[in-house]
Length: 290
Image (cartoon, rainbow, N blue to C red; front, side, top):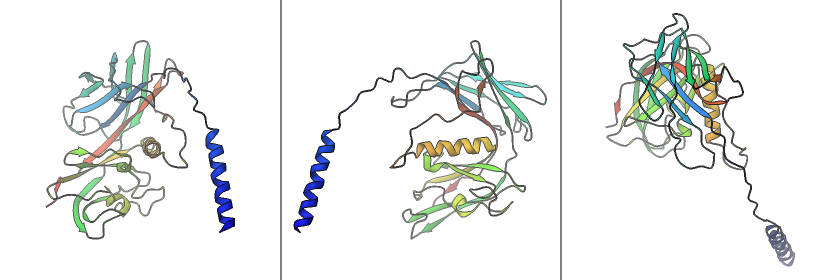
């Protein structure tokens, strides 16, 4: 006991000494540099397509980035050279109404072209064909699922397309509201979470098809799942986004901007944020939890 008391007293004194050596230091980092941000995920459905343009804000600055108006922005079909202009709806939100489904054809390449003063920004993406969805179901799990509480859990029944090298983004809607937290980013390579997954053309593995949300579904809620066939570049971009959003704890690293696939062709030193991707989209029927 005497020895234990001695070491405890010594540890306390060391702690007090070290804490007394801590002085706050204010660093003047100067104003943050604004960068153009373009978010353009365009699909082949007849739905109105949107592109969102804004300027970046400092990491420690609160608030939502304000929209930014460009001179023009649109998509170019590289095979027919057909140009699809997007109209500005205000606050950096641009839209295009396709005359029909598959206005943007799978298997083609499209270029994003944006003009802002003397700068021209471009990117290119391939439109991959969508997969298919059989159904979505739910089941009451009395012991919970994947560490969650007991309740109703939704399962997606869908298969990977035949042929290796398909990339997917599964997006969940709860009561028509897309779930967009870090833990809701659900991406896959073929039917698995890694390259060379468990089977080409098979059902998505359980961690993908069943681990759609950590919170059980309440009676009366509706569930819907959307599968986007994305490019490999978009897959790795989303992987980095999820890593940055979950960058906490003892081994957290300094946050950094995620590289974009959009470039300024007349001034390579002008950096851009955001991403452009053409996607094949399929959406499940709504499921009512009864």
